[in-house]
Amino acid sequence: MDLLDKLAQLVDSVREDYNKAKGGNKAAGTRVRKAMQDVKATAQEIRQEMLSSRESGES
Image (cartoon, rainbow, N blue to C red):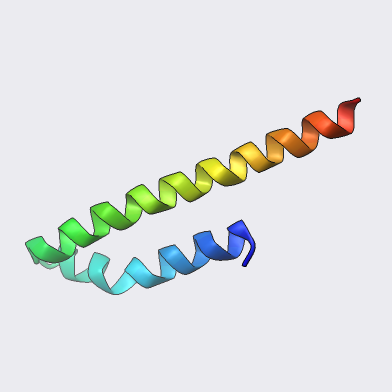
C-alpha cells in the first residue's frame, strides 16, 4: 500500500470515533488523538519520501 493510501485509510477509519468524540464520548476522543498521531507520522513519512525524490532528481 502506498503511503498516501495509508493516510487516507487512517483518516477514514477515525471518522466514526471523531463524531462520537464531538458528542462527548471521552474514550472515542482518546482513540481519535491516538489515530491523529499515526496520521502525523504517516504524513511525515510522505514528506520525507517527497524530499528524497526531489533531492535524487536534482543531481
